[in-house]
Length: 286
Image 1: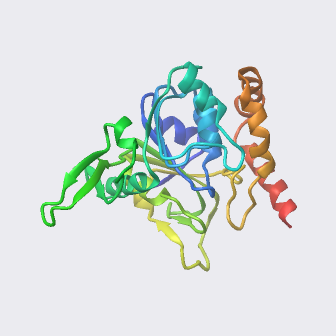
Image 2: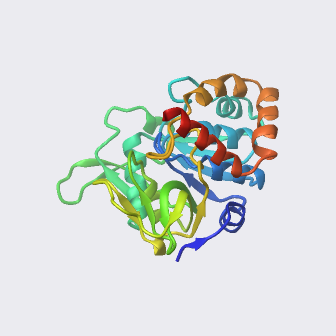
C-alpha cells in the first residue's frame, strides 16, 4: 500500500545507486521536483529510461547521476538539443553515457509488456528501419500461428518508476487526467514507485472521461509537491513555462554556466520552490 512521505524520504527509500529508473510524463506532468531530489541525494550509476527525455534528464545526466539512457526521442522540445546529454555521449563529461534508442511504438509496447509481467513486447514495427543495425535489443520473431515476421524488444521493468500526478487521496489512490503518456504502465511495471502530486484530497470529485486511477496498492510512495511538474504543466493547476525551456538552451550549453545554475537552483534549494513557480504561472494564466 502507498505510504504518504516527504520527497526526501521517498527518494531515500526507493532510489538506490545503480537502479534502473523510469521518470515518465509526456509534455504534461513531468516529475521535475523528484528528479531534483535525486540529484540532491547524489544518486550514481542510474540506468535512466524515458520515451522522451528532455530537461530533467539533461540535468540528471549533467550532474553525473546516469550511466545509461534508454529512450525513443531526446531534445529540448521546440528549442533544440540537450547539451548535457550530447556532452556525455560525445565527450564522456561528466562521465560516459551509454545509449539505447528505440521507436516510440517499441517503447510504448515495452512498457505495456512490463506492466503485464511479460519478458518482451511483440509488435508490428521496424520494417525497413535502421535502428536494428545499431541496437541488438531489437529482434525479429515469427508468429507461430500466422507465420508473420514481427518485431520484439525487451519489456521495460524498472527498479523504480517516478511520475507526477494531479491528486491523491489519503488512501494513496492516484488520479491522472489530461494528456497522458505511459505513467500508468511505468508504475505497474516497476518494483518500486514514487508519485508526486499537486495535492492530497479527501475525495477526487468529478472526473473527466480520460481519468486514470492508480489504486493505492499499486503505488509505493505518494508525496505532495505542489508545482512538482514545473516547468512542464499540470492540467487545471498551472501552464507550461515556455520561457524556462528557451532559457535552458543557453544555460546548459557550457559546463560552467550549467554547474552554476544547478548549484543555485537545485543543490541549494528544496521542493518548496516548485510551489512558488506554480503560483506564478497560475497567476499568469489567469
